[in-house]
Length: 192
Image 1 (cartoon, rainbow, N blue to C red):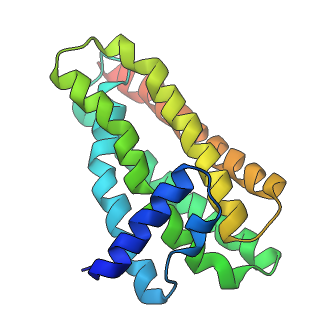
Image 2: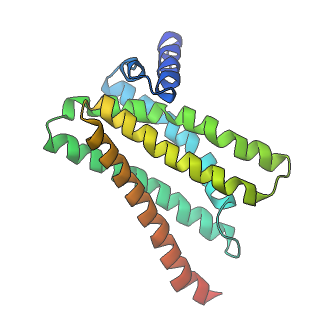
């Protein structure tokens, strides 16, 4: 699926971005084929992120409801975030950098998976779930900081604009959580 050399180059780019090195963004080859291949990483991360979200969710509700609701939330938030970046790029004449942004952001899922790994390791060791909440919040906020960094350097925009778009991603995600809470409290809670 990935050529050995391009895979190593992309992993090096992910590592450099995780250290906030601007050169990491430039390491990725950019083509439509690379865009489609890069979606492998969000697809790989999806079940793990979903499991972590469901495990750390409030108890008392059906796991199936939580899996479906948070699964839909993750997919919708991802799609809305891509649409936001697309419309932004179109508005400020940055469409030629859109592929690079998508590729880099998708590949960066590897670093986010590495950040989620301690949750699963500690869960396997039997650690109480309450200990993960602060770390989960830290990972979430850090992922938006990285998104702002990637937006800034991939789209070649001022950091203030990259930060604003990343905060907009946070707004979209939190709205998704609010919708789940509304549905849960309005429909699911009354059905129990």
